[in-house]
Figure 1 (cartoon, helix red, strand yellow):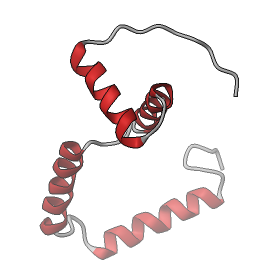
Figure 2 (cartoon, rainbow, N blue to C red):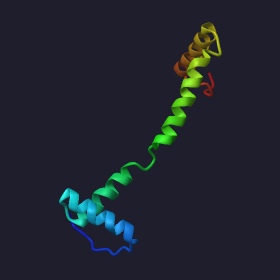
Figure 3 (cartoon, helix red, strand yellow):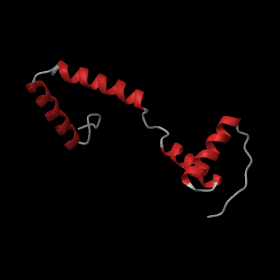
Figure 4 (cartoon, rainbow, N blue to C red):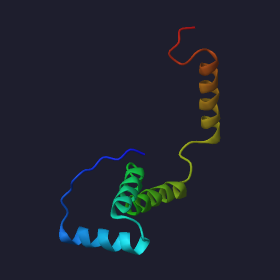
Length: 94
């Protein structure tokens, strides 16, 4: 893998964490930083614990409400959607 040398400015607390983390894992500081960036990048777009807990509460609340329509209404709507798909879609002229 080709590498590029870059320069960053960190506060003392971050430098201390970098030193400690690299030492504890017995890896070079550059490897520690690369791994941290890779892991952080993978989490972009994922829910954090607070967001996940909030959404689970919403789902649980909705699940306890019960159905809002009868089974007959749902079956009728699904039959209409299936028929529309077979005909080329709801907006497709017959």
